[in-house]
Image (cartoon, rainbow, N blue to C red; front, side, top):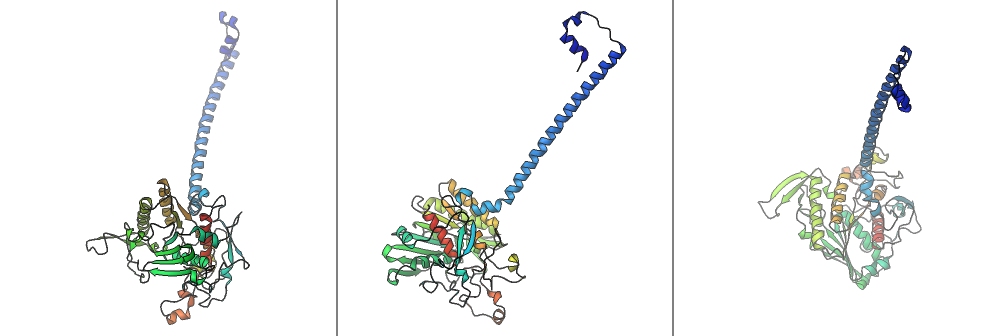
Amino acid sequence: MNLKATKTSLNPHLQKKKVVMLPREEGRKVEMATKSQFTLRLWGLKNRFNSILTMSTALIIVLTIFITMRNGDQAEILAMEAKESSAGTCDLFSGQWVYDNTTYPLYSESGCKFMSDQSACEKFGRRDLKYQNWRWQPHGCNLPRFNVTKLLERLRDRRLVFVGDSLNRNQWISMVCLLGASLPDSHKIMVSNGSLMSFKAKEHNASIDFYWAPLLVESNSDDPVHHRIPDRVARAQSIEKHARHWTNADVLVFNTYLWWRRPTMNILWGSFEDEHGIHKEIDSLRGYELALNTWSDWLEFHVDHLKTKLFFMSMSPTHSSGEEWGRPSGQNCYHETEPIAEEGYRGKDTNENMMRVVEKVIKSLRGRGVNVQMLNITQLSEYRKDGHPSIYRKQWEPLTKEQQDNPGSYADCIHWCLPGVPDVWNQLLYAYLFPE
């Protein structure tokens, strides 16, 4: 601060007098001026430091949010969106498996007239039956009890169709067993017509169907029996061949994942009969996206959005690598009798990039006024390394001596025993059909 200027402004009389500065006073003036300039410089440096500190803090916050968002991708994909991952206010997909041999299983394997030999583990020699007694318990609430009478009444004069691969067929068989257990034989029938299989509850005029379309779009693997083709080809922009069989359904449950789980896919532009069709080997993830976009376009323009309820099942996990849950390398689901207890366990075979594609397509559909509810079965099924058929199922081809000597080498760690895990998938479907 300038001492002379301050004194002058405070005392007007000093303006009329000539003030003679003594040498000592002059020195004090210079000293004060120097201090003032130094103070101003310090203030400027402080402001600059504060600005740099503020910018650095902002950068750290942005980076933290970015990292958090990346780390949170998995949770976001699995939940789809927090408020959309539940029926009502409870997140039905977050919970734990509780052993319950009082109320589970919901039916007996031998009592299901249309049980598949692919899932009849007890029939094919499995003796540890605890896999049938696990109940899914969401955190903070209860999964609604499956009411057969209520669901059959809802399906009166209606049609529920599962569309997809053998895992969706696994779920369909579960639904047939759940519903059929309470019906006398004279009130139920199974009809098969190529790729379409129909369970009829005759008294209710209800049809619970499965349509084989492992890639959803047309492919050279569409034969329901002879579909094990090494050179898989998909017409990623053609779905009419399949869709005409299920477009008029009242409830549609889709899945597709397992058959896309390879590095590349041969995509065909044109028909299989056209010798001039264009084939292109592309990344499977890109082919998966093309197929789901074709599927979503069909839903937008050809399905009655007011009448039909739409569901998409998230990927069903496999348990082929025992080292992921603490077993020696080379082991798999063979001999496993207990679920995985680790909260949030995730196997390496679960492809999060494919889940992101599904999420993106479903969000796009919602933006176009088509509501598809994704049922997130992935995490709850991840825990169930004990629930697969392993070696206890029908073998479609004779076993070699090497396989007989090493049973784990041919263990099925993809599909599920029934009664078992797919029953819970259907309980989740039931919860969304009857929201509280």
